[in-house]
Image (cartoon, rainbow, N blue to C red):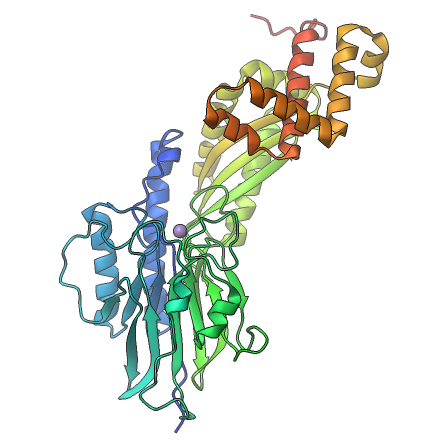
Length: 449
Ligand SMILES: [Mn+2]
């Protein structure tokens, strides 16, 4: 008799209890909205497990945002996993670099269906109608910085039916790690896809990378090893502007003891949006608001969600440049944030401006100015020369670096890409031209009061 088909749910990086301290500075209300989005993602996860009658739930690390999240946050997890236990759905939790073993943990009467992994790989069986349908093994971080290759500690355990049993059950490994040593993620528990292949595990339930990524799908794997799946479900809720797009978890469908399908299901409650807007053809500032609002509205329609946090970059030559630069960055940001909030409320939505960058430029005839000679021409010439040569940009950075005292400032400078330096040079050129040409085009503006 073959094993029954079932599904389970795999999530990671919930980061519950994040204070969103970087955002509180901009708006305390926005930070609160983000906290509630993270909490609602947990609710969505519980709902999904129940709706799909999941055989179990796996959480692969960074469940909490820090080693000392408050009791309210910890109780939320207790309440969520207890309610699943009450429905007969066990859960398996590993702790990652944000919430390692030794973090402060409130004491609760956890139901026996909730399992926490320790510093050594532990294995649990999942049984259904008297048969073992899966074995789930996992490990937690003993401390925040784990540089060992934890994947090497995993070995498929002998199955109660024996490995030759045609009904061989599913083997799941739960690990918070950086597969392939991807540089933009903290290099915790680094390992390779070959390491994962060697363990004889059918499904690697990974955590750490906040964007959903299937490293190996059903029936895939690496050459020479039996097939396996390895998946990052991504964070359950995008946490900042670097985490745009849908965030959620994976429903893993198992048939005949094998992974048959991996289904991504969004659990997020708020989307981050990056907008680049060309103001070149705009005739009034109101068009900036209506363009941002239209994009937020489209994002809501597309995602089915009510909340959008948006970062705006304005570019383009023309009349709006002078208007924007005379307001100053702070004024523009306040105006656009308030206007967008208002537009959102009117549409029954929650729209929040994370930040706005004014990269517009004056509508000036570079060629004519260059011909006119003098300081302005020299400035344009120098900026052009710099932007065209990556080597010149790099040597500019090096010479500034030598002038800088604080190591942090030097490090920040060294981290800039050539494109970023080119942008800064363009901004400096615009700023300098604005100052040099100030007043020349202002006559007749009629708004000096
Ligand atoms: Mn994380």
